[in-house]
Image (cartoon, rainbow over all chains, first blue to last red; front, side):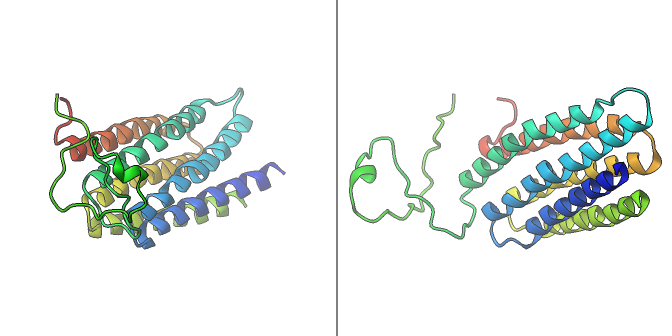
Amino acid sequence: MLEITLTVLILVGAIFTFIGSLGLARMPDFYTRLHGPTKATTIGVGSLLIASMIHFSTQEAGLSFHEVLVTLFLFITAPVSAHLLSKAALHRRIRSLSEPPPLIDATDHNAVTSDEPPRRPSPAPRPSAHPPR
Amino acid sequence: MLNIAVLIAFALVTAAIGLTFWRLLTGPDKPDRILALDTLYVNAIALLVLLGMHLDSALYFEAAILIAMMGFIGTVALCKYLLRGDIIE
């Protein structure tokens, strides 16, 4: 029973890790590529670490808590790094499959309320949202 | 049965690392390459955990914790460099 559980957890983790990297290699766009490796981080490495925790807890006396540290750290840091990566890609105007949302300047409130079609983003470099300190 | 499962998992994670390396080498833009590096350290953690189970040694988790922390710091530093042109302002 224990061995079956461990086998299922290891296989699910490895398959999800592989699918995450397959999505990274095969997706057509950066923003869709960002989607794949997060699954590899959460489900893939998460179930591998749970399998390792069960394995070492049944072999030696006492629970083993190293895996909990790794799992917590990965689960906390994965959304932060994905958010920063998407911010960097938006900042660099990476080519996207969908139309980018219209740029809204701080002084131009008509772009929010009017019914006119969204403007194309201007090719001129706009000032950064955060002014340099 | 567990040994066979660990060997299959080794093969799958190694294939994942190969695909990630391909994206790292041919990624058209800089955020693609940073994302490939981010995925690469997660795959390295998975490989280290599998190696620890295969060799029945708990020593590899220290390396996994170190790789997790340093990989996150590296990703954040590279993204900050792309965003602001500087890391520590």
